[in-house]
Amino acid sequence: MPSILARPCRRGPLLLLAIFLIGAPAQAHAQSGRGHTGRQKTQQPTQQPSQSGTPSAPEAKPGPRLEAGAIFCQSRDDLVRYQAAVSEGASPKAEGGPPQCRRLEKPVGVQILDRDGPSRTQIATTDEPKLTGWTNAYLP
Image 1 (cartoon, rainbow, N blue to C red):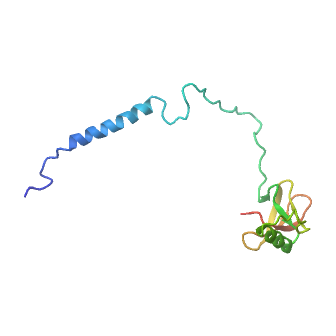
Image 2: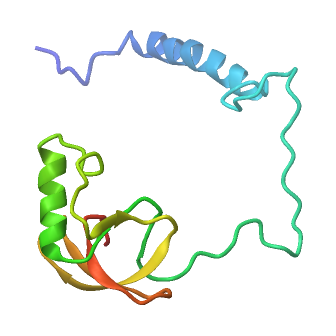
Image 3: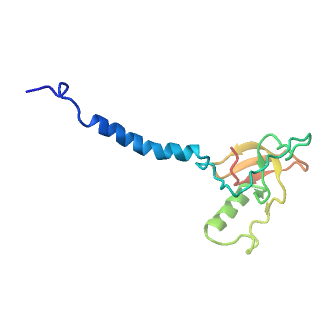
């Protein structure tokens, strides 16, 4: 019985030809300048923003912060009542809600004081006025 390695391979040239024919159109497409650029020939190139001395966006304040719209409650119990009302489908604002909870109107820098699970964090604001309270906002 002859060895498999001793037999000449007849498929080798056909395999090379198939690889060449499959790869040739992809290479031609990439060289034509139309591959994966996301632009058509009729579109104008996008212009890069000029580098000027003024920053384009204000620098973010360091440290954790509550964004506008975050819930801020005076006590942990008020936050628990607020969360219970929301989970039951009631709108705390429509029913008056806990009197000591409110939505923040602007971003506020905070310092984390304590945690009661992932959805309750005791915080102290670092902005004026200095307040201490509880929030359900995610703070890493």
